[in-house]
Image (cartoon, rainbow, N blue to C red; front, side, top):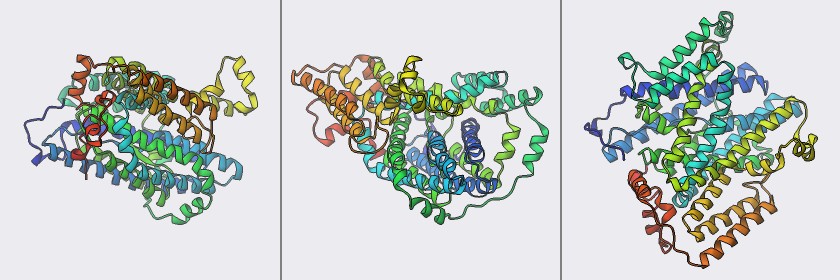
Length: 556
């Protein structure tokens, strides 16, 4: 339970000391991601530096500053409503999984086929627009999913994203230059996971970045000529409408829907889990307000020429633990936007070693992974792991595909028998990892309800998994009828098995004292998995669910 500080929220300060820590931590996080997507645009899709620095980054800057200012306002509104001064704004930036997906799944194949970077760009912009529309729709569907999905399933699938897509690549980059990265990570862990403070309460995020940068320059990892060359490329770029680019991409919309629909669902599911994560830390935001902002950000960015949908980030509990409140979010949006408008990211990449920047991503992964187990009952630990597994499979098959592509081949060319002979169960992992976020949510929920001996609910979630598999939203290569019938049949059989046990009217498992304490700390947030079997009215279910207080805590 979050304690209210003595200062009332009526005169809530715009900036507190903890915002400095959170700003440098989160700002570095977003900085890394923008540096990464800049490199992907230039190095993979071969877009011109003029298009990247003159259009894409300014468009992204507008979306980021608007979104972060919005979430700052939302945090301050929540603080005043609950008369608290410890409310932390939701972190917001370019969606990390999506920036790899739009480059490698949408834009790169078109570029390789046509050798036309602009055509690839317009497809990416159209794809981002479709993502935004689907997230807007999800704003009206997501709250109901959150209401009935147990916390272990929501946080488990979020932990799967953090451990794989957020943590593993940064970890690999760190160990390539461990002599720079590990001291940075150690300083971050000391400053953010303990009560130890630097002299003068110097911001730990800034200290870590400066330490890694100093080690990199002293050790010869950086080059002055590279900095001079990058400085010559600085130029002002202001955002402008790119509707022609967007409409040209939308003219061939049908092929984009196969990935846009499930990934749009992924976006609002991820947003849902991130809101749940914030609620776990004590800040209960209205899910619909969050998803409407995420969808609007993707649409605005695409209209200005950005193919990178922004989203609420994982990591709210980390920035809250670092002392961040409302100011860090707005400051991050404004600073990153200014850097985008000035085309500074080429220069920054030559000043700060990557190994000094990426440890903050690993820290976030550690924190969210730990939260999934700490904020759920120990008896539900198996459900958390079940929700993790599809994300691990998606990450693993992505790594396999990249390795095979680098060797000039593919899994299809190598063949399943050869891969199986090498001990690689590629085909099964590929199916498991498709639609990983939704798949993890379904699996985690089924396991929770089986553990709690609430077999009717387990059967309902299994049946939902069957439908989602049949139309390809999970475990399917594309959206189509009978996308993966054998998986759909498997979920259906699970529903039948659970339904038969439900007929036996076995008494549900009673929560132990530890679970009741978790409910008390997190506002009854684990009670959704233990709602009485006869709780059929919406009001009764709402009172027992993670979103039970949403109507009174939403940022409207």
